[in-house]
Amino acid sequence: MQDAAADSAPNLADRLHRAAHDHGDRPALHWRDRSISWSELDAAVTAAAHGLAAVAPHTERGDTPPRVAIALPNTPDFVIGWLGALRAGLVAVPVNPGLTAPELRHVLADSGASVLIGTDRVRSLVAEVATELPALTAVYGTPPTADATEPPSRPHRGGGDLAVLLYTSGTEGHPKGAMLSHGALVANHEQVDRIDPPVVGSTDTVLLALPLFHAYGLNAGLGAVVHHGATGVLLDEPGPEAGLEEIARHRVSVLVGVPSMFLTWADAPTVRAATASVRVAVCGAAPLEPAVAARFAEATGHLVHIGYGLTETAPVLTSTLVGGQTKAGSIGRPLPGVRLRLVGPDGVDLWRDGQTVLDDDPDELDISDVAPGTDPGQIVVRGANLFAGYWPDGRGGPDAEGWWSTGDIAYADEDGDLFLVDRLGELILVNGFNVYPHEVELVLTGHPGVAESAVLGVPHPRTGETVRAYVVPAQGRPVTSEELLAHCARNLARFKCPTTVEFVDALPHSAIGKVRKTQLRPATPAGPSASADTRTEVTDGH
Image (cartoon, rainbow, N blue to C red; front, top):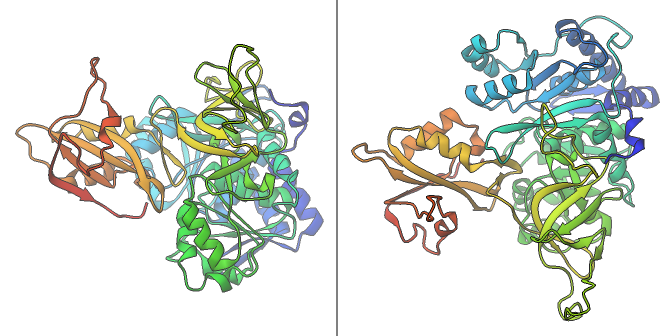
């Protein structure tokens, strides 16, 4: 249940106006050889708000606002379009510009977006699905603008009003729009603000290399810059050393990254000099190997703090910054203002708000002194940063008391630090992006050379996990791994595509016909039922 403070929270476009008022000449964004001050950004966002309001359908205060899809890379145009939509009282729908035509069609159709701001590449994809989206107004390159100095006449929205739909794969196998309110976005910043010492302040320069269509880059990165009136360094092409030149050039003080970035930085010969100005380094979205964190710390002198969260929580839930110390493998402690429980398979709390829940049954043996900490349990959370459920009807959201089950399993040690164990279900995390195996399996079995397939996630040193496919070839239809990988690339975003295809004679099944995926994780590469003649590893870096 969201607290009352969230209902009065402004939206981030209001925070932008405040930053322009307080320090208008200070840089808001650096991008390539261009710098934009807070005053310039505020004016550009107002112009975009009027332009978007002019092309979006008119709605009344009680109606759901029109949705604006934004399929752009990390450029000032994304920032202007995103904040312009919020200032216009519209709902933003950030979209991965690397989606395929079928994936883009699903997001646009499901969200009911009436406006799309996209790249030239997106233009060709829209052309493929234009007949199915006759009401869509598409704008390419930059957001539409209109001259005006005052905010648009549409109703101001904030607090519990819907701000953004962020599409994430869920248990149904198709991307679903997580509904985040203005209040939820701002609440997560206020929760992080209660960490001492501060994570981000107005004098900080923050690296914005994470994709802005993802909750981590959008709110933990860009949102934090706007909330604090700090300075952001946009990277749309990080390069082989993940932007170290830009980090040094702009004296970045807050690094916000994912494991693959820290792996690259840790091994770069120039990393110590490039990160001399860094004050805080934070990694999230996927587990960071302790060895990589140790190498980065040795190379730079900076500890890597780990955060954990989900799209549905705007996104941060825990951080090692809360306790002030790092432990190998730990995701830290809940943010101030976030309530967190670990719930066992029987529905009983094992841990709640930093305390182990002791069994009060007098007949049960007390072994708390023998085995400190808790058994693994599902993470269940409550806070003002939680989403309102999935679009359009709020299904799958918090319960009547405001608690939401994350689907992640963790345990707490004797100090109250949390450690992720696994995820419920079969969701795969590639660089923090959700990949649901069923979606990939549908694509694979749609190829005439595939009789059956099974997909699962396996550890990967750069992306946390990668997608592995096991394929039973169709009789009489020879197929190669290269052919299947190309087929996936035509139908799936790159991060969803398998990097390994293994051909097997048969898949292990249960008595009811379900594939036993646990039996596809053998010690040998191909497994007991696999033919060892074909095994293709593709290291494409996604």
